Amino acid sequence: MTSPEPFGARLRRAMDERGPLCVGIDPHASLLAEWGLNDDVAGLERFSRTVVEAVADRVAVLKPQSAFFERFGSRGIAVLETSVREAREAGALVVMDAKRGDIGSTMAGYAEAFLHRDAPLFSDALTVSPYLGYGSLSPAVALARECGAGLFVLALTSNPEGREVQHAVRADGRNVGATMLAHLAAENAGEEPLGSFGAVVGATLGDLSSYDLNINGPLLAPGVGAQGATPADLPRVFGTAARNVVPNVSRGVLRHGPEVGALRAAAERFAEEIRAAVTGA
Image 1 (tube, rainbow, N blue to C red):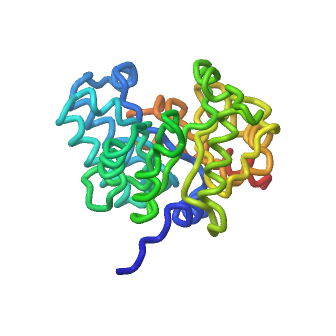
Image 2 (image 1 turned 90 degrees about the vertical axis):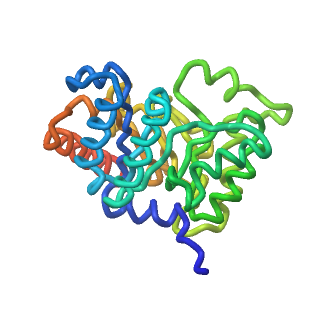
């Protein structure tokens, strides 16, 4: 059997062809209300289908937030399955934002749910938490390699609470966030054109020059748009790693719904601004 093309290679191609924008699918109650939808499964389905219809054929990545589907139980998960399938059929890569983290067979179970090619929720990549120790992610790393999928590991997040863990200094003088980046650089060593194991690094964090962000893998960067970061900030924050940044924009695009045309126009504006900022073109 032919090995599947690695996520990193597929992501690099999608970013080069469509631009590096990642649009979140975040159907929380307040956004459903802004769209004039009820906070129920019907509203969830309408919201998700509209976002997929609007942008899945033109952006590199869609990132559904699993929690906003899970809150509706099995019917919400069914909507998520459909959204993932239809987004991938339209050509977008899907990053499942589930931030799973556990040990042993439980971590393996989470990996099977999202990274096995035969799973109903198979996604191109999954966000994971390494704060039970980076080695706890081993089952997900192994299955991602087998299935041509990827991981985005929480490394330097923008939430204030994250500092107490991510900025804690180890006995060797390196902080925990930098340690996670080093682990990912090792995972991606020698991969071309891009490794499949990325980091989540907030675009709102300001000067990150003290960190080595050149991990030969993608950097998923929340915070552009409603959280205050702009496309123009990306080269300053990410430096020479900016070409591998996948900026996530959620509310900045989604607030323009429910009209498909308005969502498309917003996504296209962000994509062009990001492309120009990152490439200097």
